[in-house]
Amino acid sequence: MKKNIRLLVIVGLIVLLATGLTYFDSFLYHDPVVKVENVAITSKQTSTDEYKNTDTEYTQRVRAKLLNTDKKGQTISFRNTYYNSQLTDTKYRVGQQVILTKSGKGYTAKNVKRDTPLVFTFGLVTFLLYCMKFDRRKLFISVLINVVIYFGYLQIIIGTHNSILLPLTVVTALLISATALLVILGPTYSALMAYSSTVISTTAAILLSVFVLSMTGYSGMHLELDDFELQPYLGVFLSQVLFGVLGVILDETMDISSSLIEMKKEVVDVSAKTLFKSGINIGRELIGPLINILLFIVIAENLNVVLLYLSNGNSVSYTLNMTLSLGIAQLLISAIGIVLTVPVTSFISSKVITRR
Amino acid sequence: MLYLFATFVVLLLMVTGTRGLTLLFGLGINVISVIALLVLIADGFNILVTTGIIAIVILVVAIYMNVENGNTANTAFQTSLLIMVFILLITIPLEYWASAQGMGPENQDELESFSLAAGISFPQLAIAIIVINSLGVISETSVAITSGLNEIVSNKPTLTPTEIFNDGFSVGNKILNTQTNTLLFNFFSATFPLFFLIHSLGYKFTDILNDKLVVAEILTTLICTIGVILTVPITSFLVYHKANKVKLKKTDN
Image (cartoon, rainbow over all chains, first blue to last red):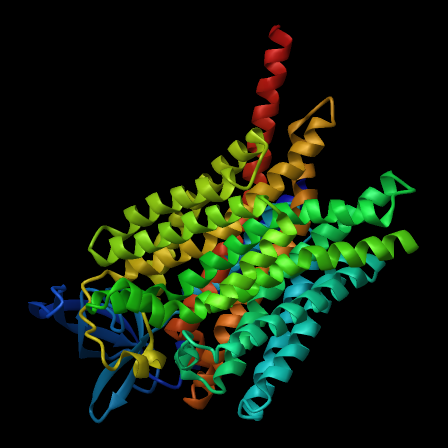
C-alpha cells in the first residue's frame, strides 16, 4: 500500500511538472507569445441578422506582456474582434497565453496557446489510471503501437499525396486490429478466431454496402461534403467508415468468441450447432449498444456544422441532408457490419472450437 | 441510401428475429431525441440544460431497452448518470481553459456563405459535443461492467469491498482496453483528413499542438476515456452497496 502511494505521488508530480513546463515553454515558439494582462472592450454592437439571430460583436483592446523573442518583457497591445457566439473567433481573457503574428509594426492574435490544458488532460488520464488497479502496461503498449502505426500512415498518405489512400487504410486497419487483439488476448487461437471474423465481416459489410450504394449511383449522399472536401471523396469516406467501425467490431468478435470458448470448457461435448446458436444469442444483445456508440460519436462530430446550418435559416430536412447524409451512411454501413459480425463470428468460432 | 437502410433492416431481422424490432424502436427514439436536441438548441434554449435533459432520456432508452435484468439496468443507469455529471464537471473547466470551441481556420472554405453571427454559444456547444460523444460509450461500458460484476457477486457467498473492487478491475481491464480502442480508432477516423490538410497548410509542430480542431478532438477522446475509467470504481461501489443491503435484509428476516 505504501509503495502504491509513493508511486501515485511520483506520477502526480511528473504530471504537474509536465503541465508546468508547457506554461513556460514559450522560448520554443518561433512566433511571439504573450500573456494577457488587461483587456478593455472598446466597442460593442448588437445586431440581428436576416434569420433573427441576435449576436453581439465586441472589439477588445488587449494589453499583454511578451514572453519570448528579443523584446521579451515588453508590454504590447493589439485589437481583437469577436462575436459573442465565438464560432471562429475567440474572446481573450486576462491570464491567457496567446500566440501572435507580427504584421508590420503591430501584432495580430493568431491562436490561443492550448498546449498546457492538453498536457494536463493527458496527465489527468494517466494519473487516474495509476489511481486504480488496471493493467496499465497492456493499455499503454497497445495505444502506443497504434499511434505509431497511425503516424506512419499519415506520413505515407502525405508523401503519396493521398493517391493510394484506400489500400493504405486497409493495410493500416489490418495492422491496428492485429495489434489490439495481440495485446488484449495474446498470441492465442481465440485471437486468431477474432481476427479472421473481424476481417471477414468488415470486408463483407463494406463490399455489400458499396454494391448497394453504387446501384443507385450514391444518390442522396453528398460525398463531396466530406471533412475539408478532401479528395478522393469515396476513398476518404470509406477510410473513415473503416476506422470508425473497427474498434466496435473487434469488441464484438472478442465478446462472442471468448464466451463460446468458456462454454466449450463447461460443456465438453457441445455440438457446433449449439455453439452457433448461443453465439447468435449472445451477439443479439450486443448489436443495440454498439450501434448506439457510433450513433452518438457521429452526431457529436457534426454538431457544430449542423447548428451553423440551422441558425442560417435552413430547414431541418435540408440541414440533415447536407450535413449528416455522410454520417448516416457511415452509420448504416457500420450497423450492417455490426449485424453481420454476429453470424460470421458465431460460425467461425463454433467450427474452430469443436474441431480442436 | 434508402436501399442501404433496407439492407440493414433485412439483415437485422434475419439475425435477431423479433428482437430486431425492439432494437429499431430504440434507435428510432434516440434519433428523434437527437433531432429534438438540435432543433431546441437552434431555437435558443440553454444548451447545457437541454443537453442534460436529452442525455438522460437517451441513457434511459439505451440502458432499459437493451438490458433485460432490472437490477443490472438500475445500477448501470445510476452509474451512467454519475459519470455524466463527472464528465460535465471535468469538461466545463477544461473547455474554458482551452477555448477549443467552434470551428478553426481549416474550415474557412466551408464557412464562406454563412452568417457567423449565429447567436448560439459555441463554447457551451463544445461541452455538449463531448457529453453527447460519450453517451454511447458510457452506457455500454456501465452495462458491461455491471452485468459482469453482478454475475460474479451472485455466485459468491461472502463479500468484502476489496474483493468486489478487485473483481471490478478484472472485469474492467478488458472493457477499458476495447473501449479505448474504439475511441482511438474513431479519433483516427476523424483526424486523418484534418492532419492531411494541416500538412498542406505548412503548419509547424507548435501550430499543430495548439490548433483548435486538433486540441478539440484530443480533448474529446481523452475525456471520454476518463468516463470509461471512472465507470469501474463507481460500478463496484454501487454493486457492493446493493449486495450489502440485500444481505442485511436477509439477516433481518
